[in-house]
Amino acid sequence: MTALYLVGAATGAVAHDRPPVHYTCADGSKLQATFSPPSTLMGSVKLVYAGSSTEMTLPQALSADGGRYTQGAIEFWIKGQDATLTRAGKLTTCRTGD
Image 1 (tube, rainbow, N blue to C red):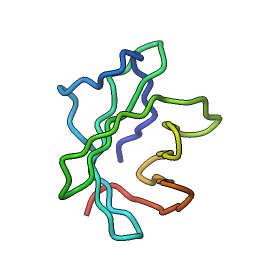
Image 2 (tube, helix red, strand yellow):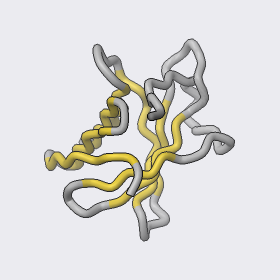
Image 3 (cartoon, rainbow, N blue to C red):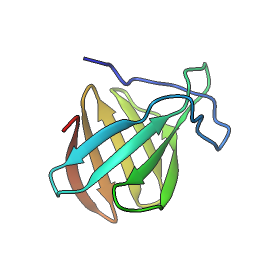
């Protein structure tokens, strides 16, 4: 089991040398998340949905538990292999693998 509690440099870009983590969500969507490299500063995650060339990079936000990334109406909150994805007020749970 890989813990995904990462903190990375807030440069606005996500490093591409880290392997993406693949998630399957309860609403049927699939996405890959590429996390910024570890650092002492806040990080970011780049999300890409399966079948789409659209990418979004979310900055890391403060979280008491897990890794929370948010911008506007989108929030991606991870803890271990599980994640919660909220888009436009609609929440779905996601899990790595599959």
